[in-house]
Structure formats: structure tokens, C-alpha cells
Length: 233
Ligand code: SAM
Image (tube, rainbow, N blue to C red; front, top):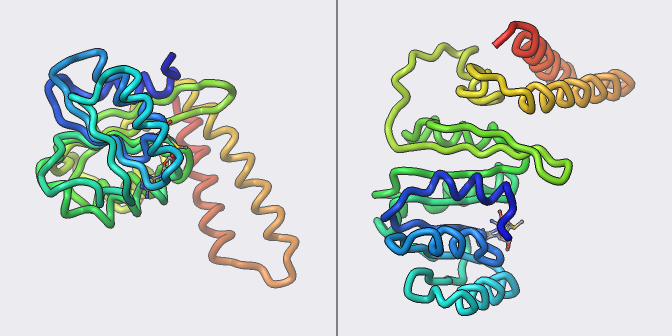
């Protein structure tokens, strides 16, 4: 049975598309999506032999080899140019997701939608979207087994909203759509993040030579978190 997290990710993949799931592990996600609809095709990419073998075994087990191709390789290197309409990268840190996107930028010619589920460092993914002409169209937050997960979906094209510098920094950190809706789990997440930053500050203040730049940066983020949490949605 597919996790609630991957079901949420799958809900953003449209019917009739060709999509890639990079870092597919057991290929649970493409198997689920291809069982749901016969008009969809998937490429499951894996960099490691073990997960690649598991993915190939799942595809065989479900008799889905006419709809899913499993490929071994690093990031988007397994794709041809202009091959996929949609791209999924889920279950890794945002920095790794960003480096996969950056290294494979030229493969995304016809990719209209990128669906990500960064475990940490969401900011880096949002920044890549901002710098690379994708705009965020959906942001979701959910909890499973005690973890909070964010799913960030971006479609090709510029954001039409006017964005100032400070505003941009907040949108990158918190998420432009979360800032509008502020769901309960989002508030919980940022309460915890605030506590975490307060602890970092008190650690930094104990150092002999204080890192003023870092202190200031974290101080500003705490101020922003308070602003975001205090005014009602
Ligand atoms: N996407 C699945 C999910 O969300 O449940 C699996 C996540 S699993 C934690 C991360 C997978 O990404 C691992 O199987 C790992 O081998 C793969 N991976 C890490 N870096 C990769 C890269 N540069 N290219 C392709 N796969 C990668």
C-alpha cells in the first residue's frame, strides 16, 4: 500500500503525460500512477544498483513494463532531451533535489510541471524554481509517522505577482502559497523551527568569537517567523 506521502505526490501527476520519477527506489510511485491510468508513461530513474533492482522487480511484479521504463543513472542524465512532460523528485533533501535540477536543466525543454517533496531545505528548491522560470502552483503539508512533509509543485512560466526583495526572501523560506493559507501543520512546523533557531542563537552566543553575520541572519528569520505566526491568516 502506498504511503499517504507518495499518494499526495501522485495526486499532482496528470493523466496522459510522460513523467519521470528520479530517485524512484522501489518504483512505488510510478507503479501506483500507472495502475491508476493506462494513458500515462513513466521513467523510473535510480543512481544505485540496489534500488534500481527493486524498481525493476516491482515493475515486473505488476506487469507494467509497457508503461514504465527503469533506468540506471545519476539524476536527469537518464533522460533524453524533451522526453518528459512532468518530473517528480521526492524523499530527499532540498539541496540534493536542487543539484539534480541544476545538473539536468537542459533535459527540461518540454517539462511543464515539476513535483518535489523535499525533506529539508525547501528554500533551495523554491529558489531554483524562481531562478529558472517555474512558478509554484501548489504547496501542501501533511504528517505521517510523526514527520511533517511538504510537497511543492511548480509549473513552467513566470510568476505574475509583483515581489519585493524582503517579500521574496519570505516567499522562499515559507512558501508563497503557505503564506496565504497558513495551514495548522505549517504553523506547528514553524513554531518548532523558531525554537530550533532560538537554541542555535544561544549556542552561538556562547562562542568566544561571535559570528555576527550568522546571528543577524537567524535573528531576522526569527522575526519573520513571529510575524508570520502572529497575524491571523
Ligand atoms: N522517491 C522515493 C520516495 O519518495 O519514497 C524514494 C526516496 S529514497 C529516500 C531516495 C532515493 O534517491 C534513493 O533510492 C537513492 O538511491 C536515490 N538517489 C539519490 N541521489 C540520486 C541521484 N542523483 N539520481 C538518482 N537517484 C538518486
